[in-house]
Image (cartoon, rainbow, N blue to C red):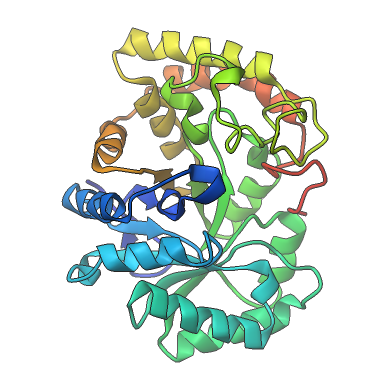
Amino acid sequence: MTYNKLGNTDINVSPIALGCWPFAGGAVWGDQDDNVSVATVHAALDAGINFFDTAEGYEKGHSERVLGQGLKGRRNEAIIATKVSANNLSAEGIVKACEQSLKNLQTDTIDLYQIHWPNWNIPIQESMTALEQLCTQGKVRTLGVCNFGPIDLTDLLSVGSIVTNQLPYSLLWRVIEREIQPICNQNNIGLLCYSPLMQGLLTGRYKTADDVPEGLARIRLYSNKREMAKHDDPGCETEVFDALKEIQVISEEIGHPMAAVALAWVKQQKGVTSLLVGARNPEEVSWNLPAIDLTLSEDIIQRLTTATETVKDKLGNNPDFWMSKSRMR
């Protein structure tokens, strides 16, 4: 497995990271056995995956606590990324949140500490100063952000530096290509891509929009009439499932599972450092491994890109998964 550097640091991470949000269970993910989650962490490490992403906001720190338990005795094998919530971005809030995350994770150092969402009511200078002090104190190794659009990135880069921006990016969610990805590439900010399998759509698991659980069907790909939706968009369900049929045809043609093909497509996009793929059990970890060494030809990449242009066009310029009024500016 070839590992990638986080920006200009000496931190090497696997091209696929284990997204640990499912460990939280709760309303979005449903029941999740902590012992199975711990076994999932071990399976990832055994497979060479060393990068783990979580957040204080995932069920009030439960995901962090489970990950900490899973890394007992193996902390030196792992790169931990976690996130501070938008409502904790004051100087005092960041310090308290970091201390709690360190406790939850049972570690002395967070490798990558990320702002989960921008908070436009707190000056970014205040937040960055506090975060940089954590680095100076050795509690954090390096800094990143999540869900930062071009304006917020520009504001941040005027007062500090980051090595990553975590964003939704997949064959079915390519909005960041319009503005955000170019800025990140220009500033050597690596892309950490969440939902690269579009929450299971790109595995072929769901044949119709009605098959998708309500907790996952709240994003803007689906109708605003879905039970947990908070957006006002009509969705693009027809375009999505038409694209999925074409992706499946291409995948069968080249003899690889659709999930592996979808992950390989994202992995080969410019500026991508790692793909955050959630797994709820060791078996699901194994499903993602074929993508690590799969390299698609330029022709296949272009055909896959063409197959999803209608979805990209329907989504417009808003990169926010969940809201019609984007929280990424």
